[in-house]
Amino acid sequence: MAPVRVTDDYYAILAVEQIATTEAITKSYRRLAFVLHPDRNPRSDATAAFQLLGRAYGSLKDEARRRSYDIIYPSITSNSSNKEKPPPKTQSLTSNKPNPETSIPKSKQGDIGDSAAIAALRKVRDERDAKWRPTAKRYEDVIFEQQREVTRFKKDIEKLDDIKLRELAEEAAARSWSAWIFSPLYKKSVETGEEKERKSNERLDRFHSKNVKERVLKSKMTILRKWEKGLRDGQDVLAKAHEIDNENIRFHENRIRVRRERELEEERRKEELVRDEARKKEREKREREEAEHLRRYQAAQKLRQEQEAGARKLREEEMAHKMWEDAARVKRMQECIAKVYEQQQYQPPPVVGSSRSSRRQPERGSCNHDGWWPKVEAETSWNRLQCEECGVAYSYLLICPGCRIEAYASCQRTSRPVRRGLRRTRPGYGNTQTQGSKGHTYDHYDEWSD
Image 1: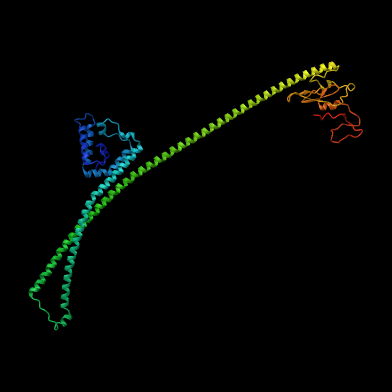
Image 2: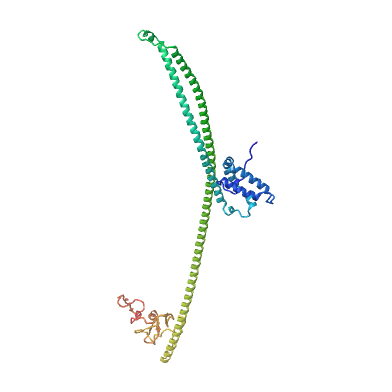
């Protein structure tokens, strides 16, 4: 009948660690048995929990069974860590305190469980080595003694064989032709009966001694091979157990390594997400700053345009005000000139803004507009004087000395008489007009007076 596979964590059931001593296991068992006994515990599953506690204690109190259980213990812990394991029945029956493992992350719990399994396997391996060393030493001592005995018996048998060979050689030499030829020369001692009997007894003793020694040597060799086989078997068992432990240790180490790599990959992924989030926030911040900068720029442009429009409107208003003042001043001047004309019995100058065809033409008979025309400038740089001939405002005008008409230089040239044959030109240039040339001539240089 195949043995039942153990799947329960006996150390957790007894509430002890894997490195606990037998005394600690016994003490914990007595305490839990006192609590879980069906006569004292009214729960319905108290009997099953008490039986499970007994099985756990029976497996761990015996050294051989505990060693066998420690070999399969890592697989039990690994299987229990892969699935959600409820708390032990003994713990649920004896205490209502929360399980402290629930406050530890699952990855850390897995690392702790694997590290504990690795430590337990190494401890079991070290204990196995410590227990095997005295046995191996005893095997080696017995084998050494047996080998020494075998060597001694072999040497004794070789000595007996040498003695026998020497006697046979002496007998052969005595029966040889050389001994027969030289027998007259050498006197040969004659052996007595007692000597022959003694030699015969010695040969018989050596024969029996050799037989006995060969039988003893055979038994010693059998015993030596048995002890050597036991040593080899023990070493093979130890090597296989070590190989199993090493394989389990590598299994747990690989699990820890894979878990660490997974954690590192998760950390790298989280860091990448954080960096992406930071880059996204930085990009959004930069876009907000650019949008804010554009908004401020547009607001500044709008404000500048409004300011320029206000300044332009203000300049237009000032210009209109200045033009109104100029018009008012011109009107006052016209009124004054009209009064002067009335006093001098002259017709007043035309009204500002009248057409050129309605303007008064100077009377050639009354005034030739000859002579030097003095210059009249405006009071300020922004004021203007209106020409009586063309009606355009200028910064200065020329006044006729005869009729007192105010005109610009170009209008002065058209109002002055033309003399036949000569034209007044700008002094210093020497470009005179020949006789008979057409054009206007002037008596006085006045148009360049400004």
